[in-house]
Length: 178
Image (cartoon, rainbow, N blue to C red):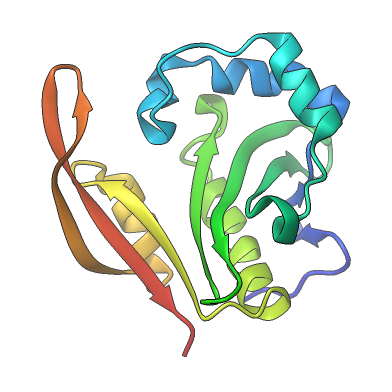
């Protein structure tokens, strides 16, 4: 995996904690119904709610048991996606991971670069034993992305998510530190 400095970065992108100037970007992503199935959200967020979240969050993974990172283009500082660590369990040395890339920046390798940086953070800085994710069985692009990094399908949750009046299987994928 590519080395990174004090900031979580490579030559093209960097990951950072949310800042007040991310409000409009987060508002756009969080209120896009196409992404709601990922977080089981069924209603939009107000700007006020998101502003309060940014202002009041400590963004310490040990305190909140989650960490949201904004994916930015290095040359322009433009926000292009979000990568989340969630259900952080230091006692069992594991956490879940999820990623969303703004549609304008999909298919450019951003998700792969972001995942590589974040996995290095998980295994080298947080010293986790494993990282896991849930992927809709029909989401071939995400399956390809995560399996490229060594995630293995270890279980199937049958008819786990209801999407547009139908039930879809969800794969449980794990990457265990070797």
